[in-house]
Length: 91
Image (tube, rainbow, N blue to C red; front, side, top):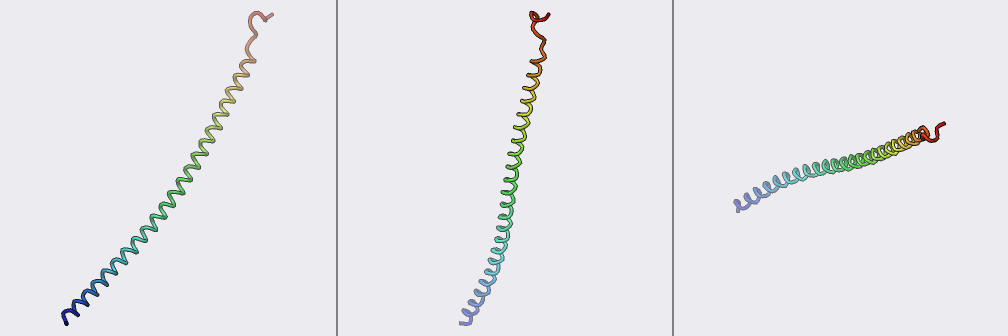
């Protein structure tokens, strides 16, 4: 009977020690999960910011291309007005 009682106390202390270790591991995992969630939120924010920057860059480039094409068209129109008249019309 004393042996069974001693075994029972040993089991209780062993289980209590295991429970403490499991609770510690659980707290560590919760901390890591919070860190990962914060990292995911940060990555989502950075991706949204990068997408916004890409859109603004594409808009600026499109505006620059349009401006360049208008400048080319303007120069062509100016050049056409500056051509000398054909040989038959000179007098």
